[in-house]
Length: 514
Image (tube, rainbow, N blue to C red):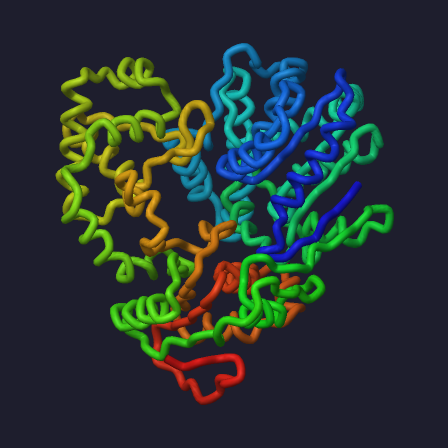
């Protein structure tokens, strides 16, 4: 197994693509190559970069971890455990009705017990029911993302299945390995144990920021124990071939030196040279912070800008004016875009959607008009669109729409509808416009000029004073959130906090106070 450790801006994906290109010439005709990455957008990025120089043949698989498990585990083998593989639908999670029923049933059972018993019963009963529901759904051909992980893990315990997959896959490449789940990691290690598949993984342990998803898992998947993150486990394996990418192709020297204070890998070198000090915007008022940031962007002739915060709510005041400007410069909201987005978010085809909810074209248009009227008065986000769709259908027809997945359509392709910042084609493609995003969504993105906004003094100094030991702390990923945010900038990194603070302690060799 080969492990490539690479910090932010080091060209991880480009390096992975080059590894894939090199391996393609050695790929046997009766064997396959599998490439796994974290998001559908990354899948498209890798395919685009590969297609410039090679033909992506049918024996080259490129997809997310869930599509990989569906392709190699579920579809060929899940029927051996009694699951349906003939007519398959993949959804994000159990339906809202099922979740509500489970919660109500568990709460009823808990009320019959004492306080201490209730605490223990809550998790045990809920997970038992969820696991049963997930398995029952799979027997009918409906697979949740958690269900795919669970069933693939069941299949991986069968040696004949692992033998079949390992003999089938000659090369396995995995991007963003720091984001893999424990179950996914265990499957990879079982493949590695058979020595029939050449495995290469790329990642940065300092950018592991998805620990929260374990708490959202419907199958009760537990988070790694302290310092047992999968990529850290690979770091400690003596037989694992390791290499590092230590040149930062993204950021100026000042920014690279700043993030080097925190990273647990070897220090990076900047390819870009010097530009300017880290900028601290000494104001706690959103409008003033934004004006100063735009002033910095214009002063240094930066094309693209990005404002980042941990929570979306922190960004609301910053992008309010932008949304209003957008609304004043566009025609009324496209009803077709609204209806397409609503339908695909249910996981159904147009025909099945209309039949399941007993809708006529007129009724669907009426719901969309209801949403449009509301949207023109509120913030335009995908979440609000779906909330309004549910509310509108209930108010108009006394029924509820069930949304299975609001991020991908029925073919697994990422939705292009972001009513907050990507409303028209010109608005989507204009890099000069300001982007507003949470840290989790900013991962993989970059901009010339980046503003990181802390919610309060405590959060700010937690990020600024973090140590390498803090970065390794598995139970508190807030430190790594700060690191990810700081490393998005190409030329200017600016920091602000929504509280008044004493700036006298700031090192003027590193910081400019503006």
